[in-house]
Length: 282
Ligand code: 13P
Picture 1: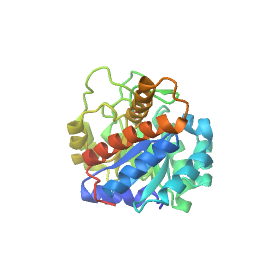
Picture 2: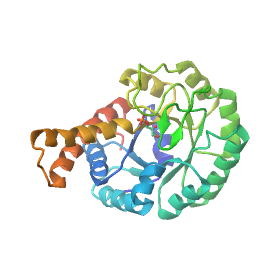
Picture 3: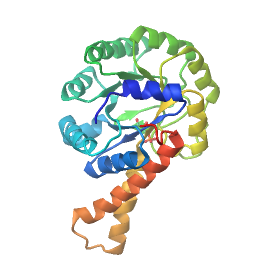
């Protein structure tokens, strides 16, 4: 069944674990994520970015997610990841997405507050929770470039941001980046703890592909309740597809190679659900 992320994340916060949020881009990735969730009896969040939405449409992804969610017993969330405008957030709300992120982290502090509050005010009457971001996740997510300026979330600003916007969860900048890391990321665990001490809503970790599992677990201990994985799912899917073509370059049936991509994504997602500690929490 499709549910909102509100209760899921509050439960994770109370239980000291996190819910994995996996970026999906086609039917097979959606199937893979939900098969993994069902097998491990884990709650799960699936999410699509603006460029994925542009590829097929919010309604397409939501319809596939709904069909897949009906086949499982675990709670499933369909979330807009890095919503880049008020309009897109409203489209996702109207389409039936059950959780929405508005990313105003590239705006000034005041503009980020105004945008995040406007989206929150519009979503809450329908009981749809909102995630916003303060600080920056490095690297390139979708068409947005994190840039090289100070990426870290200021804890005092985070407190004010949460109070003035009314958001339900907060994505923080503590040194992670989207995409493939060149070296090992250096995470600022202290900043995360400082934020957690004065902000009481669930915190979100972005840019988790390539972050060592032990670091992710440390982040969860320090207040992260939602962990986003995207790049590694792409890598897993493509690895599976490539294996089929390496064996027979003349393969023409998309079901043949997509099924192997799906299997690789499922393996990866099961592994990360264990890291998040969400197994058996459905
Ligand atoms: P990665 O691509 O680094 O896993 O980041 C995922 C993410 O944060 C999506 O919002």
